[in-house]
Image 1 (cartoon, rainbow, N blue to C red):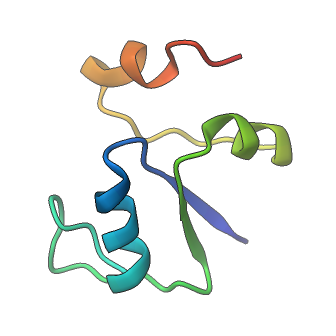
Image 2 (cartoon, rainbow, N blue to C red):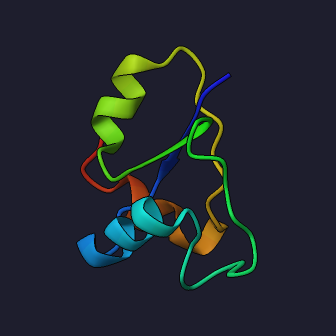
Length: 70
């Protein structure tokens, strides 16, 4: 199974996650396995390439996350 981690925040945050295999803002002590988790900010591409999508977005941010997405 492959997991794509969607992060639509600042590009420098995504680059940090890709380089250090951890989120600089949340769960800082947790490192992820780059062979199993792929960080991305391309939500439409991820949706089009996958049969199953599991969301882990805090409910106050759902509208903002999916604004303008099809």
